[in-house]
Image (cartoon, rainbow, N blue to C red; front, side, top):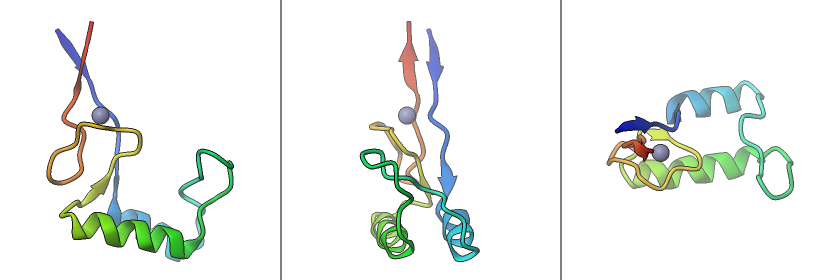
Length: 73
Ligand SMILES: [Zn+2]
C-alpha cells in the first residue's frame, strides 16, 4: 500500500515571507490573504505546541507538525 503526504512550510520561512510583505496564507472561506498579525498569532500558537512546520489541511501530523502520511488505495 502506498502513502500520500501533505506538503508543509517551515514556520520560520512563513514568518520571514510575511515580514517581507508576501501574502503567504489565504483564508479558505473568504479567499482573502491573512493579515500579518493573524499569521503571527497562528505561528505563535503552533510554536507553543512544539511545531516547527505548518501542514495545511492535514489531520495526521507528528510532534513537529509534519504530515505522517495517509494510506492510499
Ligand atoms: Zn497529511
